Each structure stands twice: as C-alpha cells, then as structure tokens.
Length: 144
Image 1 (cartoon, rainbow, N blue to C red):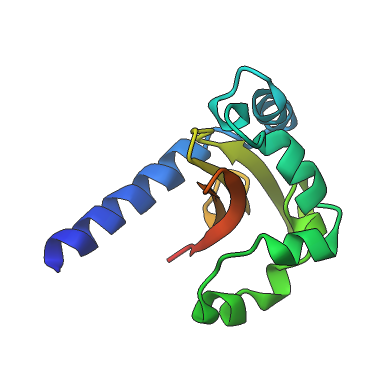
Image 2 (image 1 turned 120 degrees about the vertical axis):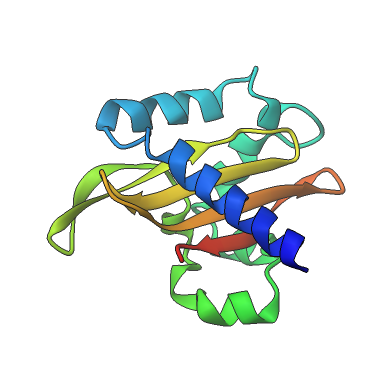
C-alpha cells in the first residue's frame, strides 16, 4: 500500500513538473499542433484523438456518452463537465491571475490536458484513455 501511494505521488509530481513548460501562448499553440498532428501516437489506431476531442468539446450528448469517471469523481468535478472545458486555452486572466490549459503526454492509450496557473501549479489534469478502441474521459487528477 505504501509503495502504491509513493508511486502515485511520484507520477503526480512528474506530471506537474512536465506541465510547467506549457504556460505561454506559443507553447499552448505548439501543444495543440502536436495533438492535431496525424503522426501523434494518440491519433493512431481505430479512433484519432483529435477527431474525438473535437466532438467531445462541442457536443454535450457525445461528451456524456464518453465519460468513464467513477461516481465520486463525477460528483466532485460535476462543475467541470461541460464541453468547452476540454480544449487547450492560451493564458487568460482568471481570478486575478493567468490561467491556461495545454495538451501534454500524447500517448497511444492515454492523453492529458493540463489545467493550471501560469508559473505556479496545476489545478487539475484531465486524463483521457483509449478503451476498446474509443477515447473516454477516464480520470480527473486534482491538484493536492
């Protein structure tokens, strides 16, 4: 049990450290270009991530059909579960600070959307996972 907790802590720190780089408008644009690229691992296979996320972030019914969160996460993060929250966003003013969302870790089976404060910390990370050939929002990792 302690090893599992330690591994989760290390992964969370790693995700936070790697996402700290995507904080300028140019870096967010570059993350979008990588995510949209046909050569990105996430776009290989039966369903391209870029096609999935284009519909997921605009069609509420489709979005609801592609959420695989447990009940606790669905309740805790209910206010985040609206289509417009699932896109990259260049830094903009929010709560007297600069907020951004950027694509990171574009893997074949998992892809992440980092959300947080410029030059500070992540508020949360959306984890998408390919299950039986289709993409789903599988987990929301909250800043701790």
